[in-house]
Image (cartoon, rainbow, N blue to C red; front, side, top):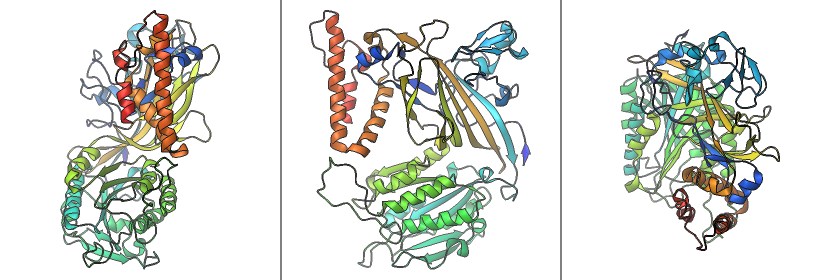
Length: 575
């Protein structure tokens, strides 16, 4: 492995301008209110939630081609930071002869010679408005089997296929895995496991793949460990080098007569045992960055993690009760997080109940993807697998949203974990170009935001992440550590009607969805529904109260005065 500059390939989530006259860039920060309330009373009088949706891997531009050579001028560690709030220098900072003034906290900082003249500053990438992408570290790897590689430098993917389903289901699963192979980088280490009443791992190092089956006993115990049968270095093969062997193994998979109920007995699907054996294998041989992609059609009902379907007729308005056996997957999720691994689950339901509620925690805690198809007829598995795994991915990420004087982040939503030592710093196990997080904002003092025109409300998102970038026409690849920055500035609203005109309905719907999901999990579906209805009633009342002050006698329940708000009732009805 050798340090090298970025390859000419597109970096996940990055599109740099070919010139300094770039067009409109994308955005990572979308406020629910395009105008920040001046203080808490004005915000409360509007009846609207205040927050942001964050899209860390949003495209930097839809108009420009990548230009990695522009990254050579400065690395992430060379970008100046404020000595008070540790924010990064940006286009909204003010410059004096020997100092630059932070746009977040107003502190003065010593000015480097790089920023000494306005002519120099006009050409610097880190001082352009919009998303700024910076390289922190880049390592090119020629041999994925190099024993000196760190786990984060060796990407591995294990596909798990349910063979307790019908032959039609297994056929769709095979097609999906073949499409997955086309989407993954050729440097990926790939493994294949099938699950029914037994767990089967494939050795794909030869043109004639060998299958090693491990039976699962009635009590859930496996006759032998997966690591004793097929160690990780034997099960995983490089996708680009062994692609034909992998395809032959996938094509050999069929529905298991001992598991699919064709003999008149009940189906047997030991998914919990399979996941436990895979995690044990990679815990013993922690040499790879693991992603498990499962394709299932039945409820896990055999061995460890067997689920008991919920009783029919239970009160739907009560607090959500998870099925018996969920605790097994909760324990597995903790182990997955400790390994910095990721789990994706694709469900093509052949049964009325497949245990989505029990499995979703295993997916969400790791930033994975869960896709549910109601049946074989509605499945688009091959197309979706190719689309999902062709998009940019980030792993082992850190996220922080800094706010200027007067307001701060109150709560965060999504698959992120707060740092135990530092406030307002969040860890993200993995995410992709369509991943969104949400935050609630609040005032940190009674006077609200600073009315000083030199320091209007400003937010800066910093997102540090790792990604794998293939080298064209080669099985080599680069492991890159990148830093994405975006700083946005918003106007101040001094009355509720100004706030109504600045509502972003899409972001508002996202914030409300996060809040209601959390309320439903803690207080029950009925209470969450009432909270949503009450909020709409209060919003409508406050809205009309402000209109009546303008001597408009008509009661407006459709928000017709502000077209950007007219979709709110319909969106809430859908919720």
